[in-house]
Length: 319
Ligand SMILES: Nc1nc2c(ncn2[C@@H]2O[C@H](COP(=O)(O)OP(=O)(O)OP(=O)(O)O)[C@@H](O)[C@H]2O)c(=O)[nH]1
Ligand SMILES: [Mg+2]
Image 1 (cartoon, rainbow, N blue to C red):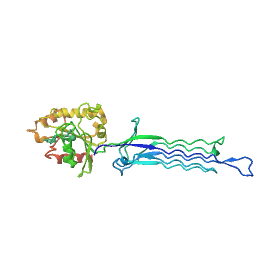
Image 2: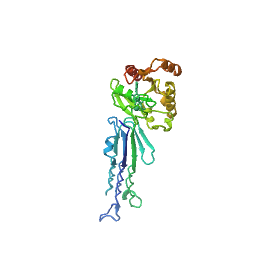
Image 3: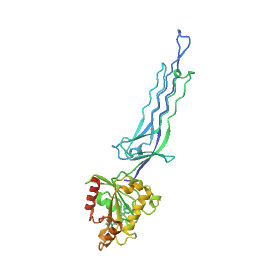
Image 4: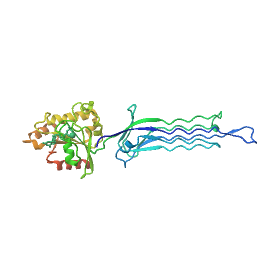
């Protein structure tokens, strides 16, 4: 599943016109101005709805217009306000102004909403102005928006390129993330469901030094990591890797810290991968000595240690 993103156009309703009506009968010396006011135009509102999982429905419909307010009429009757138009999106949707890029709202919890275009005020009718003229109604705001759904994973797999993240996601969930013997195989987060635990796991593109500044595949997906509860730091422990396991661990931590230090407060599981390629476990001992971490040892390829990793994820979820 790629990151879900869509652009939409919204327009709020215009206000209803105020009524210019005046009334006179043969018994009256002067006319009476009795025009009512127009109703307010509907707002356009975007609301997080937990029963929706994707932005797909918005790929089919991208223009939204709220109703106009009703016009006022004689006898001081006011026009009705129009109802707001509510666009429902999944929890975790970022709402941005498409032209300025400004973040209007991060709809991070169910029911949260944001008014993205305000309806015009109703015009004022002749009965309510000093000179019995009418005040014209306001126009509804118009806007282009970018909606973007953050991946909402419980567990995020982070690691350097080719450390085996996609292989691991597939071993855990059977998601079918593409595996390649070259770096940057994964270009967007891929989600899988670990059915035993009922959790969503995200395979991320590889992280390299400078990722927090946009290097490599950029910092776009680092945002997705901010949402995960648990991070699996996946490290290639095989002898032929260029970067030593402990250095890899430090690079990962440093990129996380530079991007957003609060990521380091998440529950983390350190995992050494590709142990099927180890002759002996001296690398593991050295890793423990240098990092003070107790890694889970796995081979994403052969499946060795995967059960232990699942147990560890279960423990962390219960914390
Ligand atoms: N021997 C061995 N090879 C592995 C293991 N896990 C992954 N590989 C290999 O390592 C290479 C990279 O695997 P991927 O799963 O694509 O790695 P990745 O971390 O997703 O890579 P990027 O998406 O490019 O960041 C592939 O050739 C895999 O077959 C393992 O446990 N043992
Ligand atoms: Mg990958």
